[in-house]
Length: 264
Image (cartoon, rainbow, N blue to C red; front, side):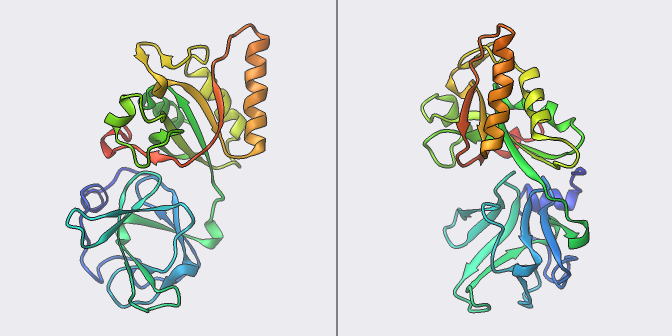
């Protein structure tokens, strides 16, 4: 995604709010999908958008797993954020009886990018852990067909962990990256091959000077096809004499890291 403008950063990163009736999507009802302005992840479809006349785009449902909720510091409202990158979207309200679902996601227009149905691209996601996520994120961002890379945590037992908690080695989480890609331009196997090339898969629970289970090498597969591809690549490396320590693990929930870790 292009760099954020000053106004977009004020809302998305600093949790600001655009003026009502000023955003370009508050009164838009064309068929399509609304994506995160910061990372490109799909958030809402036009089917869930409704007219509320509140001055901001309103939705009564999100794409499953796309939106994260957090209680505001004052405990009065519930903030909604992009689950992939943690970008601020707005707030969610219930009990207004504006639709049958009785819920309203009140979203800032600048937090989103609209893609008409005719231009929709069916993206997929892949999750890899190869030591410190900063370097791994950098390499995947260079790949044509990759639209977003988010640093985060996965594989542990603590929900919404902090960087400090993960660094303690007590959460079970690994530092990892979530890669959003267009399978028409780059395949999962190409991404997995790159993953094995940019780190040392023979090191167990470490990468270079970084020690601990949080720096383990792992492929977090989401389908049997992804698992089979990872197994094939590991087998090829072992046939060449490499003692591969990479773990192949069914993906659990991915938790985006703090904003200051993104696009480091």
